[in-house]
Length: 278
Image (cartoon, rainbow, N blue to C red; front, side, top):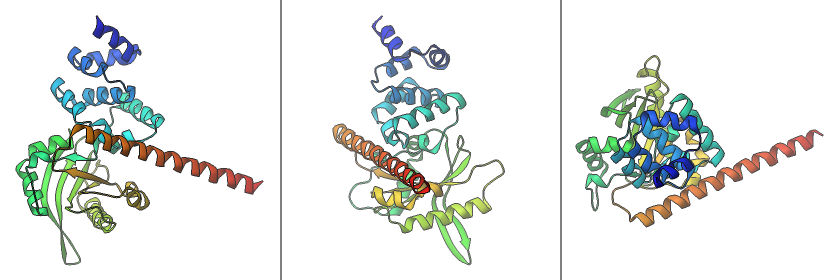
């Protein structure tokens, strides 16, 4: 009875309840109803419904703070509500729902000093676990894919295809922190793939730079999102849950504050233009 009361409080919309009950079990719903944040609860409910998670997988995703690691969680609440409503209505995933930051690669067993080839080899050895961390929908295509331009050879570290995004996904591995020149390298790969590998009906290729660290202001000034490039950190060692929670909460708060300040600046700029016109 206690679970039923909690369920009624958590999901007051009968239409949403009807849709969820057709696709999720009662054990799924019990895992969801005790999440205090409604946006987080809706996120897990919709992702569980679309990707067909088992109850065990759902609990693991919640425990690994998947929601807090998505780009979606860093947006203002109104935008999150709109994107989740669109997901509910159309079942269409967006990159902000698919890509994460950080990625947990502690299962690779890398310790001490290692090189990019060691990281790549470990990922290939643990490909199943790596794809599980990337998320549902990723299919492995190639390793060290060679592309030739003007007689010069370049090599894409890892190439995937995402079934729901309907596009190729380039994954570049970096042992150091993100640097601005990484953008140019990734743009070259994406444009080559778009020109020579993109099939009819596919969306434009997307790139993900996995690096040991990044500085958020550089990412924002470079406007990587316009180029279809995502930058994410990876962790090869497990962090204590309290440390991870604090880190992710600060990241979310900082991202939302920057977005609010940017929007406020745009409003002020538009008002100033209007006043000038008068």
